[in-house]
Length: 117
Image 1 (cartoon, rainbow, N blue to C red):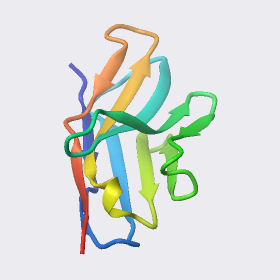
Image 2: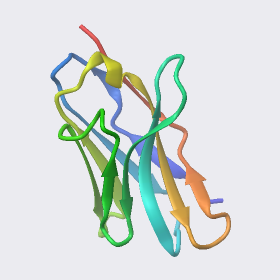
Image 3: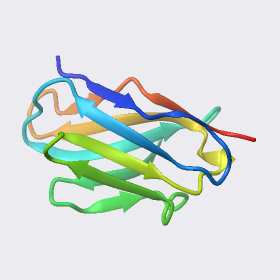
Image 4: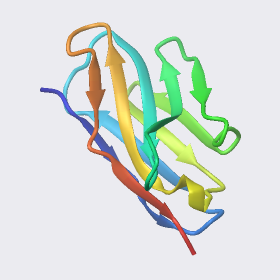
């Protein structure tokens, strides 16, 4: 079973930056979307950013202008560049890929981002 492996989380002060990375452990064919989904303490999961195979990006209003999702086809890695971080960005960030082939949806284990003074 292919898994998504995330890295790059950590502790950062408000206004700081982090870059998250997500790489599959094996081949995923017919990728439709790559996304970062986050879940803050006591909150439901929400889509932070997504990128389609056609290159269309979508961002939550709360992160627009601060987060950038991108994909490196050579490294087969999706990134989330997070700038001007705020305490409310504190969350467990999950990588999620969808495919046109079974099992259709892949999730990572999550990487913790904590923004605090």
